[in-house]
Length: 101
Image 1 (tube, rainbow, N blue to C red):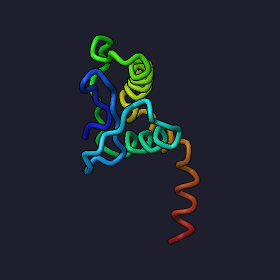
Image 2: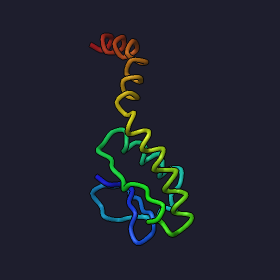
Image 3: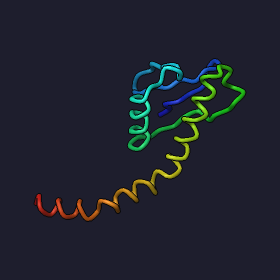
Image 4: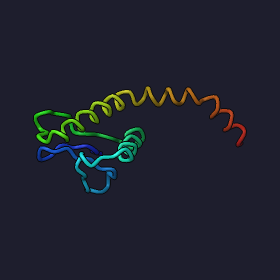
C-alpha cells in the first residue's frame, strides 16, 4: 500500500491505507511520522520514488527528500532490524513465555 506519493508537484501522505484521504506533506507532524514508522515496520509499505523535478513546492521537496531517504533505509534494513530486536530480547521472551505456561 502506498503511504507517500507525489502528485501535482506536491508531496502527500496518508496514515490509513483503506481511506483515500491524502494530506499535504507540509502538514506532517511528529505523531504522524511515528504512525508512519509503525506502519512501515509492520505492514506492506510503499512510496513514490523521490524525484527532485517532480516537487516544485520547496517545502514539500525538502520534507519528501528527507522522509524518503530515511524510510528507504529503514525498509531496506527491515529484516535485519527485526532480527536484531528479536535476538536482543530473545532471552527475556523465552523466560517469560515459559513462566506464563
